[in-house]
Length: 350
Image 1 (spheres, rainbow, N blue to C red):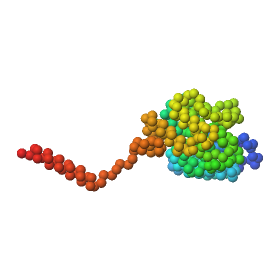
Image 2: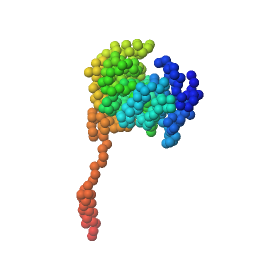
Image 3: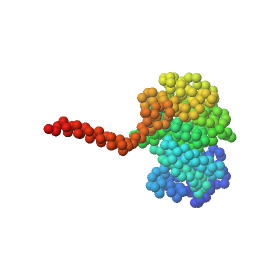
Image 4: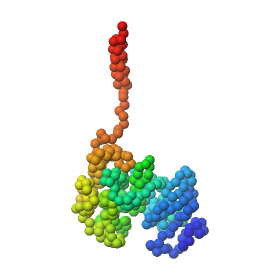
């Protein structure tokens, strides 16, 4: 297939649309997007888009550019725009900032985003189980971000290790939740089931309306996998994985999570019936933060003090603004100092 650079400028792909399983790439190194962003190299590929490292020629910095891989269509443009709007609406440190949205000359949409340098949570999981305290510290910022997304009126629908990046900043790992591409309004019903089978809640897999509790399920699958060091649902293909998801009824997690209290928190999030799960990430985050605090930790992976975000942790742990010392207090201090000086003077004066 010809590269976009081999076609006349501004031309569209050939009229014959490709089969649904084919994808067209509109990015190549050196291409200038929107008269501003110079594509450098591809850094990721998803079901609908390719992500490129790019240089912002105006601000002289690097950004990430996501470009749709496929023929231009009004529905695709709308979906990309909605993805950009949702990520912007969350406004959370654990969600990369959306910088720009637009169309290539071919009519294909792109999103410019904050570049996150680091590996994914999936890469970390390949090294084996993560210590329970560390796993909870890494996931708490994601819980806070998902809570904000739900309060903004939408469900992420694709929480998985590959969509959680670990930005390396000041020697620490800062979790970042990415890819709001298949997010939907709370309670929406889809015409087709889309997502990642191993992390779909049962109601999502069945095409039923999803709310915050669907993301709670996915989040707890990821947390369980961090603790266990392996996938929770495995199969020969997507169909077999979905069968195992739909058959799941976690009275007990597999062996590997020894802390009974943490096991109970995760197992509640994996209840087959959404009514038995944590109702929100405020509830789930409070439970995890309280568990972490009881083990002597006072902050999450970002360094955010637990008491400043989660109600289960005593507020005395949170640093607050220093209280102003009023003028009359200073006068009192000076007066007392004066009396001490006079007393000492009387003792040494002949």
